[in-house]
Image 1 (tube, helix red, strand yellow):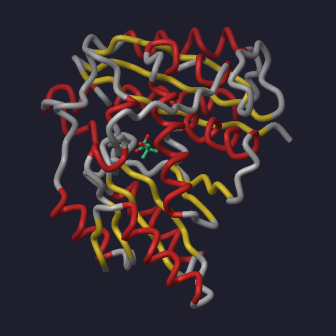
Image 2 (tube, helix red, strand yellow):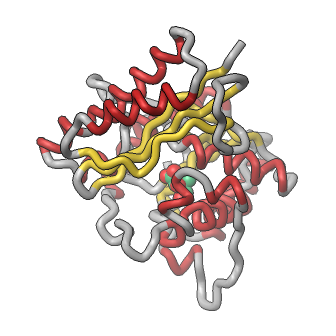
Length: 282
Ligand code: PAF
């Protein structure tokens, strides 16, 4: 496995692979890799000849008061995990390599990017779309692999690929959870022992909502009232949002029909965590 830091090195390697007839998959990441990322790599390895993982904490997707500086970083650990998963190339650029002097081009997702997480993180999806677009242009993958935990991000990237006629397939992969239910996230490392226990309120509430819908609840207000009440029973939790939206447009719905996404962002102390479930009506 190679670790490279420049766009030129990635392009040269991918060109060689293309000449040899290999398909190429990309797993974009911000590093501090965990089992959620490992499962994306596994899926990518099972479908592609060559797998590239990008490790880049993208400053563009963090607001001024967010955790860009404190975001956890551990390249040695990331290299070991990628090696274990049989990854072929890690792309680990510096910020200057991605956004050189006079950088001035951005990709903006309108309505979809303004809902849910977009309300409390107004520039977030502009940063995500811009960096993902650049990664797609640099690596030119046949397929790129994203986790369902960031459901809005996944929907936005699928929309961007469709809207801009990009030549690749986006593969969404299931949420990976800790044994006790907490969705895996690099940000879980911010939690104190007490907060880690309190954070279970997210997955417990997701399972509660999932059970209600499986058992026939179709009224969104009833579902959301029960979910919010459950979260509010945890003193360390503060709701950012809990919403039920159409899985493609991210617009709120009142009845559960077709494919709906129930998504939440909740602060546990100062740490903002997200979780969700999708329900496909038959
Ligand atoms: O999901 C992430 O880790 C990031 O948002 C991504 C897609 C790698 C873009 O920086």
